[in-house]
Length: 267
Ligand code: MN
Ligand code: MN
Image (cartoon, rainbow, N blue to C red; front, side, top):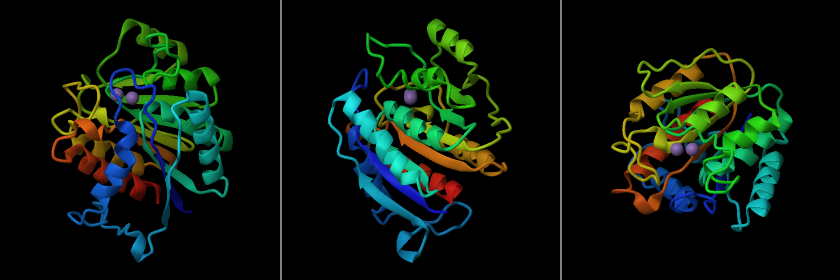
């Protein structure tokens, strides 16, 4: 079972600042800059040059047109997983999770999404835009193709989004509820990581600073809790890294670390 890595450089419907489209090359550069090795924390060597079983498909070539871009992302993801491979994508803003999850939910029944984010991204529309990066989980849930949506690290709930969470039966674990425990998971799992789940002290290269977030260690701990369960992570994305706002390449490096651990989790 191999993992395919796909860069998804799309940020045309970010509501506030663009930038995450340049994240895939920034994270790849951090992975390959020679400052860290390719091993996961539990000691598995993921260096592709030493035979680790994953391949990088490179970046998609996407226009700003949202209908074209999401159709292309969905098609590329569908093709990537058609042979049973798992898909790990590097975003991009969070809108890309919608076509990626569509592809995964077409192939697997009863998918559970575990979504790490400061924001619930459940707006029906934001500023008149139903394709905003603040809306993907509303689009996913109204299609009714996934079994569960579990959100963790949330700290920007609004009355509208709480209504949406109730309407769609979303399981929301808020950041103010300290003592993070991932609930029991069944069936295929899709992991969606918005890097702003972390406190901006750990990941300053984001478009929406939202203090009061998780530490890098807490996120790695949550991934470890997923790894310890019987379920299989069949797809994952890492989104919302904004290199244009990064400080000393810190967020790209945190992204590289999370990427490596996610890859280890999937392999
Ligand atoms: Mn998000
Ligand atoms: Mn967010």
